[in-house]
Structure formats: structure tokens, C-alpha cells
Length: 78
Image: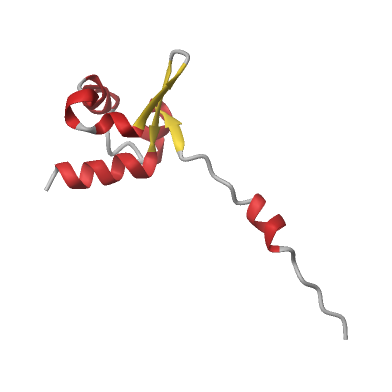
């Protein structure tokens, strides 16, 4: 009787995700439920609305943390 065991480290490496996405990637992540103009409006005032901790810039690109934004959205839109 032979048994094979998978190394959990190897299988987990194949499932890594990057939680930071560009504005276009975030729109795709939400299946176009949030428009580009809506997210850009939120991002313009991110220092005042608390969204700044879920947004990073790298060069000229803006990256949004997917789960962080969704949590912020839930908290601020009750």
C-alpha cells in the first residue's frame, strides 16, 4: 500500500494572492459594481475619510487593498 502526502508548503505557495490592486484591477474585482469615477472620488479625499490606510502609491500607480477597502466601505456606509 502506497500513500502519497503533499507538502502543505508547496500547495500553499501556488495559492498566494496579492491583495493590492490598481484602480482598474479593483473595478474588475468588484465586477464593475463600483465605477472608476466613484473610486477616484473616494481616493481624492482619502486623507479625510479614513481610506488612506488602505491605499498605497508606487511610482505613479495607486494601489488599493481589496479587503481593507471593503471593510472601510462597510463601516462608512451603514
